[in-house]
Amino acid sequence: MDELTGFVDKTGNKWDMGRYASLLGPEATIQSFRQGNLNGMVEARMTLCRITEGHSGNTCSVCLKWAGQVVSLTGDVPGFPSIEEAREEGLFHPGCIHNIQIL
Ligand SMILES: [Zn+2]
Image: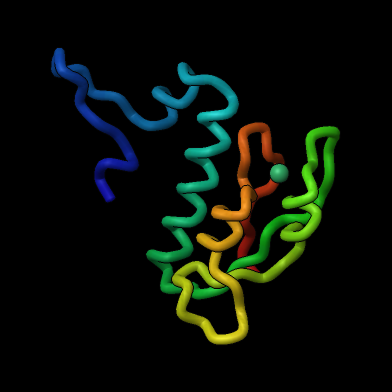
């Protein structure tokens, strides 16, 4: 998972993801924060997580459906939809305020 903690650019500068994300702006920051959460849970061998609840002005119908739902991180837990399914339906769209949390 080295590529997620940092990288070296063409000129040999080392970047850590936090610094990189802060230059990309809030949206990239929240995306990488979410991805970091997800990776941490998978590494800890967790199989289920919950989509956080909560609504804001840009909450869409997709978010209303998925907020508070328990989803499978790996997609192989019977009876639970996978987080990939949620993503394909549009969860974590740009500006999305939702995240994942440990059950
Ligand atoms: Zn959303």
